[in-house]
Length: 247
Image 1 (cartoon, rainbow, N blue to C red):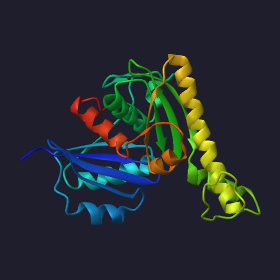
Image 2 (tube, rainbow, N blue to C red):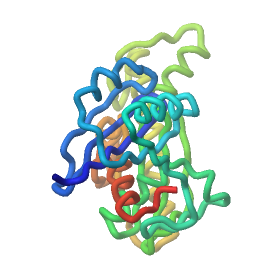
Image 3 (cartoon, helix red, strand yellow):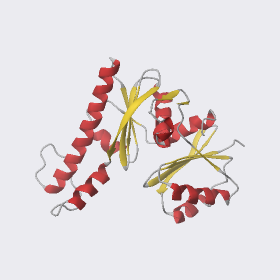
């Protein structure tokens, strides 16, 4: 029987998890980050994995809760931390350890998928635009509020705006569509500008990889050719576990 690796991508809103073995992904799922009852109902029938590797950006409370749950089943979680070099990626952050572990895992996943210069876009609660050069060096990246954060900020900061399901339009003619379109176009322009800057730095057109909960939605707003990879962070975590580059 093959040894199973459980991978945890713990975000601010959701936990993406998957069981990986010799044949690849055997099972995957998504649950709310702060809903412990979801963990119990989802994982109680899951065989105890041989090993658990996780990335966390949701804070200490999530680490404590998840660690306690799996300790109760006889397993420790190996929480990934950013380093100067990892699985072929050179971390160019001023303070390498300050880079989010999810961003590092996404960069590792993108590098081993693309093996070329690329823009790595993660569209979740926040949107990150991270640049890799043709040698796998992480040059730096931007952090923006995500779609829902932008909408929440506009609604909470203004008297006349309210939550509504708008559609992205070229020329919006109502408030709901105006909100949806403004947010979509702002994020699309940010991605396009980052891609153009990376192309100018490198002298050649980079690839583009998009991941995260809003990845499909964001990809629809772009005029760039991009690869949609929903499980990019988890792919990177598997690679880091295989190369023992977790901590």
